[in-house]
Image (tube, rainbow, N blue to C red; front, side, top):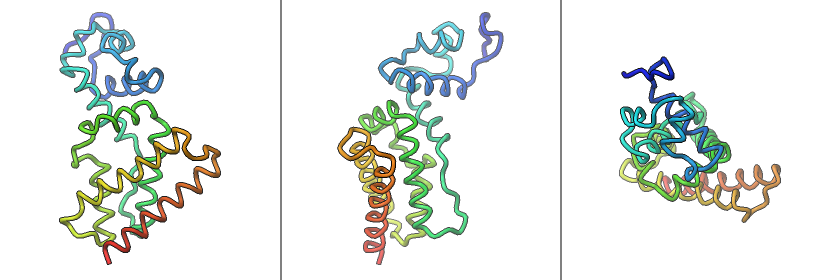
Length: 187
Protein backbone atom coordinates (compact mmCIF):
# COMPACT_ATOMS: atom_id res chain seq x y z
CA UNK A 1 0.00 0.00 0.00
CA UNK A 2 1.52 3.31 -1.06
CA UNK A 3 2.06 6.00 1.56
CA UNK A 4 1.36 9.60 0.65
CA UNK A 5 4.24 11.98 1.20
CA UNK A 6 1.77 14.48 2.67
CA UNK A 7 -0.05 12.06 4.94
CA UNK A 8 2.69 9.80 6.15
CA UNK A 9 0.28 6.85 6.64
CA UNK A 10 -1.36 4.50 4.15
CA UNK A 11 -4.98 4.94 3.13
CA UNK A 12 -7.47 2.23 4.02
CA UNK A 13 -10.77 1.43 2.34
CA UNK A 14 -12.51 1.97 5.68
CA UNK A 15 -11.02 5.48 6.00
CA UNK A 16 -11.88 6.35 2.40
CA UNK A 17 -15.45 5.07 2.76
CA UNK A 18 -16.08 6.65 6.18
CA UNK A 19 -14.81 10.01 4.99
CA UNK A 20 -16.96 9.77 1.86
CA UNK A 21 -20.04 8.96 3.99
CA UNK A 22 -19.37 12.06 6.09
CA UNK A 23 -18.92 14.24 2.98
CA UNK A 24 -22.17 12.91 1.51
CA UNK A 25 -23.97 13.61 4.79
CA UNK A 26 -22.64 17.18 4.67
CA UNK A 27 -23.13 18.01 0.99
CA UNK A 28 -25.04 15.25 -0.76
CA UNK A 29 -23.81 12.75 -3.32
CA UNK A 30 -23.60 15.50 -5.93
CA UNK A 31 -21.11 17.35 -3.70
CA UNK A 32 -18.78 14.36 -3.46
CA UNK A 33 -15.88 14.25 -5.88
CA UNK A 34 -12.65 12.29 -5.90
CA UNK A 35 -10.78 15.60 -5.70
CA UNK A 36 -12.75 16.79 -2.65
CA UNK A 37 -12.35 13.41 -0.96
CA UNK A 38 -8.61 13.42 -1.65
CA UNK A 39 -8.28 16.90 -0.16
CA UNK A 40 -10.15 15.77 2.96
CA UNK A 41 -7.83 12.76 3.27
CA UNK A 42 -4.73 14.89 2.52
CA UNK A 43 -3.68 12.80 -0.48
CA UNK A 44 -3.25 13.29 -4.19
CA UNK A 45 -6.55 12.51 -5.98
CA UNK A 46 -4.80 9.84 -8.05
CA UNK A 47 -3.98 7.97 -4.83
CA UNK A 48 -7.65 7.17 -4.41
CA UNK A 49 -7.68 5.25 -7.69
CA UNK A 50 -5.32 2.69 -6.16
CA UNK A 51 -8.20 1.76 -3.85
CA UNK A 52 -11.38 2.51 -5.82
CA UNK A 53 -11.46 2.53 -9.59
CA UNK A 54 -14.23 5.10 -10.08
CA UNK A 55 -16.82 7.21 -8.33
CA UNK A 56 -19.34 4.41 -8.89
CA UNK A 57 -17.00 1.97 -7.10
CA UNK A 58 -16.59 4.56 -4.35
CA UNK A 59 -20.37 4.79 -3.95
CA UNK A 60 -20.62 0.99 -3.69
CA UNK A 61 -17.97 1.13 -0.96
CA UNK A 62 -19.86 3.94 0.78
CA UNK A 63 -23.07 1.87 0.72
CA UNK A 64 -21.27 -1.15 2.17
CA UNK A 65 -19.70 0.92 4.95
CA UNK A 66 -22.93 2.73 5.75
CA UNK A 67 -24.77 -0.61 5.83
CA UNK A 68 -22.20 -1.97 8.30
CA UNK A 69 -23.01 0.97 10.58
CA UNK A 70 -26.65 -0.11 10.70
CA UNK A 71 -27.54 -2.06 13.82
CA UNK A 72 -28.91 -5.39 12.62
CA UNK A 73 -31.09 -7.38 15.02
CA UNK A 74 -29.39 -10.60 16.08
CA UNK A 75 -31.11 -13.95 16.21
CA UNK A 76 -31.51 -13.78 19.96
CA UNK A 77 -34.57 -15.96 20.18
CA UNK A 78 -36.96 -12.99 20.09
CA UNK A 79 -40.15 -13.53 18.08
CA UNK A 80 -39.70 -12.88 14.38
CA UNK A 81 -42.17 -9.99 14.61
CA UNK A 82 -39.92 -8.20 17.12
CA UNK A 83 -36.85 -8.88 14.98
CA UNK A 84 -38.60 -7.59 11.86
CA UNK A 85 -39.70 -4.45 13.67
CA UNK A 86 -36.13 -3.93 14.96
CA UNK A 87 -34.77 -4.29 11.41
CA UNK A 88 -37.36 -1.88 10.00
CA UNK A 89 -36.57 0.65 12.74
CA UNK A 90 -32.83 0.31 12.07
CA UNK A 91 -33.48 0.90 8.37
CA UNK A 92 -35.66 3.92 9.12
CA UNK A 93 -33.09 5.35 11.56
CA UNK A 94 -30.33 4.79 8.99
CA UNK A 95 -32.32 6.65 6.33
CA UNK A 96 -32.84 9.59 8.69
CA UNK A 97 -29.13 9.64 9.65
CA UNK A 98 -27.97 9.54 6.02
CA UNK A 99 -30.80 11.09 3.97
CA UNK A 100 -28.68 12.14 0.99
CA UNK A 101 -27.07 8.72 0.63
CA UNK A 102 -30.36 6.94 1.21
CA UNK A 103 -32.15 9.05 -1.39
CA UNK A 104 -29.38 8.41 -3.92
CA UNK A 105 -29.34 4.67 -3.30
CA UNK A 106 -33.06 4.40 -3.89
CA UNK A 107 -32.71 6.04 -7.30
CA UNK A 108 -29.73 3.77 -8.10
CA UNK A 109 -30.92 0.34 -6.88
CA UNK A 110 -27.94 -1.47 -8.43
CA UNK A 111 -25.91 -0.16 -5.48
CA UNK A 112 -27.80 -2.40 -3.06
CA UNK A 113 -28.90 -5.19 -5.40
CA UNK A 114 -26.43 -7.68 -3.90
CA UNK A 115 -28.62 -9.92 -1.77
CA UNK A 116 -25.53 -11.16 0.06
CA UNK A 117 -25.40 -7.84 1.93
CA UNK A 118 -26.04 -8.10 5.66
CA UNK A 119 -29.38 -6.30 5.54
CA UNK A 120 -30.80 -8.73 2.97
CA UNK A 121 -29.39 -11.76 4.80
CA UNK A 122 -30.87 -10.52 8.07
CA UNK A 123 -34.24 -10.01 6.41
CA UNK A 124 -34.08 -13.49 4.83
CA UNK A 125 -33.31 -15.00 8.25
CA UNK A 126 -36.30 -13.23 9.81
CA UNK A 127 -38.59 -14.19 6.95
CA UNK A 128 -37.55 -17.84 7.34
CA UNK A 129 -38.49 -17.58 11.04
CA UNK A 130 -41.87 -16.19 9.92
CA UNK A 131 -42.44 -19.25 7.73
CA UNK A 132 -42.01 -17.61 4.33
CA UNK A 133 -41.25 -20.42 1.85
CA UNK A 134 -37.68 -20.44 0.54
CA UNK A 135 -38.68 -19.82 -3.12
CA UNK A 136 -40.55 -16.68 -2.01
CA UNK A 137 -37.77 -15.10 0.11
CA UNK A 138 -36.35 -12.85 -2.58
CA UNK A 139 -39.69 -11.58 -3.84
CA UNK A 140 -41.03 -11.08 -0.30
CA UNK A 141 -37.90 -9.22 0.80
CA UNK A 142 -37.99 -6.93 -2.24
CA UNK A 143 -41.67 -6.14 -1.68
CA UNK A 144 -41.03 -5.41 2.01
CA UNK A 145 -38.10 -3.19 1.05
CA UNK A 146 -40.31 -1.29 -1.39
CA UNK A 147 -43.00 -0.90 1.27
CA UNK A 148 -40.61 0.41 3.94
CA UNK A 149 -38.75 2.58 1.41
CA UNK A 150 -42.04 4.09 0.27
CA UNK A 151 -42.96 4.82 3.86
CA UNK A 152 -39.60 6.50 4.46
CA UNK A 153 -39.87 8.58 1.28
CA UNK A 154 -43.37 9.68 2.26
CA UNK A 155 -42.18 10.47 5.77
CA UNK A 156 -39.06 12.39 4.78
CA UNK A 157 -40.72 14.26 1.90
CA UNK A 158 -43.51 15.67 4.05
CA UNK A 159 -46.38 13.49 2.80
CA UNK A 160 -47.07 12.53 6.41
CA UNK A 161 -46.70 14.43 9.64
CA UNK A 162 -43.08 14.83 10.73
CA UNK A 163 -43.98 15.35 14.39
CA UNK A 164 -41.87 12.83 16.34
CA UNK A 165 -44.86 11.21 18.04
CA UNK A 166 -46.66 10.91 14.69
CA UNK A 167 -43.65 9.42 12.91
CA UNK A 168 -43.42 6.73 15.59
CA UNK A 169 -47.14 6.01 15.52
CA UNK A 170 -47.23 5.89 11.70
CA UNK A 171 -44.17 3.66 11.58
CA UNK A 172 -45.64 1.30 14.18
CA UNK A 173 -48.81 1.08 12.09
CA UNK A 174 -46.80 0.35 8.92
CA UNK A 175 -44.82 -2.41 10.67
CA UNK A 176 -48.08 -3.83 12.07
CA UNK A 177 -49.51 -3.99 8.54
CA UNK A 178 -46.35 -5.68 7.26
CA UNK A 179 -46.36 -8.28 10.03
CA UNK A 180 -50.04 -9.06 9.51
CA UNK A 181 -49.43 -9.40 5.78
CA UNK A 182 -46.59 -11.86 6.36
CA UNK A 183 -48.71 -13.87 8.80
CA UNK A 184 -51.50 -14.08 6.19
CA UNK A 185 -49.05 -14.97 3.41
CA UNK A 186 -47.15 -17.68 5.28
CA UNK A 187 -50.27 -19.31 6.77
